[in-house]
Image (cartoon, rainbow, N blue to C red; front, top):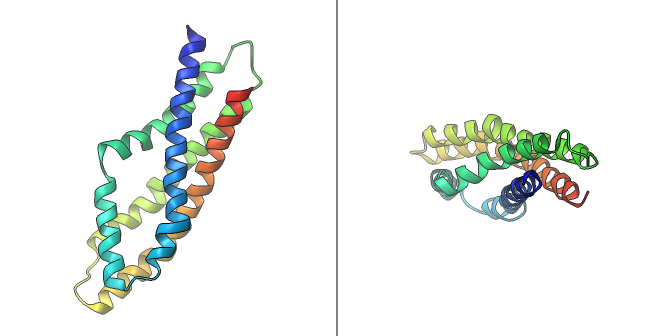
Length: 160
């Protein structure tokens, strides 16, 4: 029964971490490069709309479940007779937690700052974008990388 539960938790971890890796990857390679072509007003309005929309039960469930299930998968294998995947589970859990931390400490504060930035004039819109875009993209690339590494490590652990 423990083996089934362990497999189920790892499956949920793979799916949730995969969903996040895909989302962050799409931002890195499609959404943000596309947004570079937008004027400041449109950019700020679009990013604010995304930031408001993404805070929903589906995203937040996946966002929280990804590191929690990665940690649970790691804990559930400790003491079992098959320790080979433990190292990969530790790496996957660590990178999943890192993705969570990067988002919470890097991207979310920038999202909040953009939300309250004054944007009534063209100059304010330009300033809001300048204060946000490059730093947000850097944090997004970091979490894209950490989430891909988390997914890869978790996937490798599932074959061991």
